[in-house]
Amino acid sequence: MVASGYSGAPHDSFAAAGGMCGGGEVAGYYRIYLMDRENHIRSFRVISCLRDEDAVAEAKLLLGEYPCVEVWNGARLVRRLTLRGD
Image (cartoon, rainbow, N blue to C red; front, side):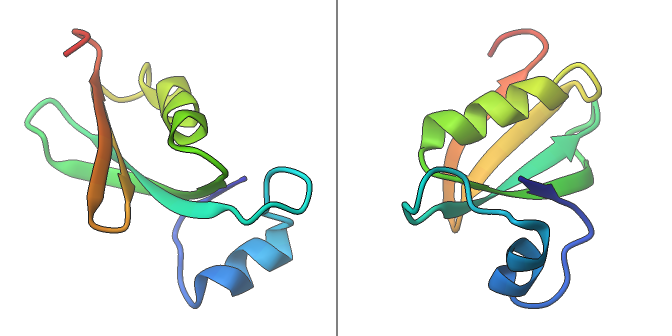
């Protein structure tokens, strides 16, 4: 489940949107930062996923719209993806 323009407590936004993925397992919240060619943040998405790999898969879907995306879980950079593959 993807939310953008996030405001308020995470559980409020995702509860209203039905934002838990998986059958009853606790999901983690991830931020996907959408970057321009100068590595400036242009937008972001907040998603809820069970695993890092799921969050990275969601980010890959946005990669064509932006030349670079970063997936963060709290203060931890999960992965940086670019159109060049680095």
